[in-house]
Length: 151
Image (tube, rainbow, N blue to C red; front, side, top):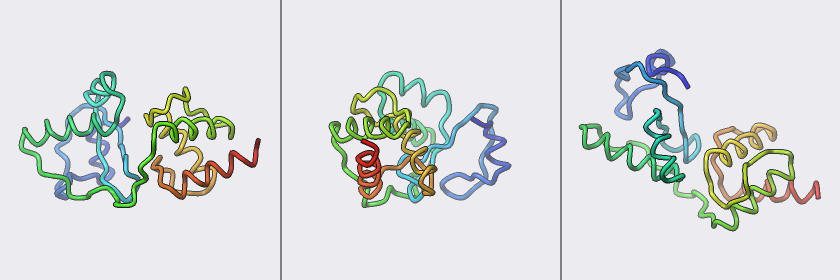
């Protein structure tokens, strides 16, 4: 996590393209829809919301709603249309596949949380892909095929 001032120095801007108004709080960059979708700087409030509901999309929605109430603009970049619709059972299988590849995806609980996204990112890095933690259909297939080769 970096301070918002550090993110601003790196050239991160608001969705409207204006400079960040840096506050002295730490923030992490989250790209839940991959490098082609919207990016968010999330602060400790995001993680507080995540303790109540482990869905990153839920926590982002609550945070974005709060930002909009405070006067922020709407999102300017929507998630890619080809985002995989994945069932809880498929996530559970994905977690087991990643584990069989030596990548810790946490408990095989079928929840696509931050630990699973980090594991997906490690697989992407290990296979020379953009390591954004985003799961699409082709990546799901690649992980499944790689796992079947080690069994």
